[in-house]
Image (cartoon, rainbow, N blue to C red; front, side, top):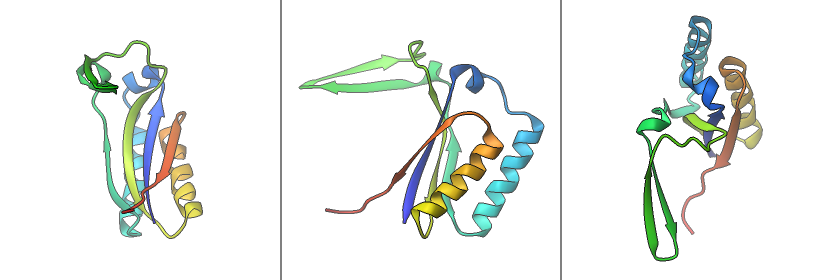
Length: 114
């Protein structure tokens, strides 16, 4: 089973760089996930001031340049997990939040085909 993990946090927390301890803990967790064959891909995101929103309503598509001041949360990063079960995905996500700190992770199973 594959899951996409989207990490959301407050704009204030996003603006502050991670501490050396947080970076070290995250590095160890990523290494463990790679060794276990669970981590397919991961990455952080750019600040919202260089981001772009593409929105469609009916036949009209609009583009909005960041920053998005109305945002209560920003996407800080993502991971794609290849696990045996939803429970295993939750376990790895909890361990991630232990390293990353406050925030929300949206964990969504990836489906294939019709």
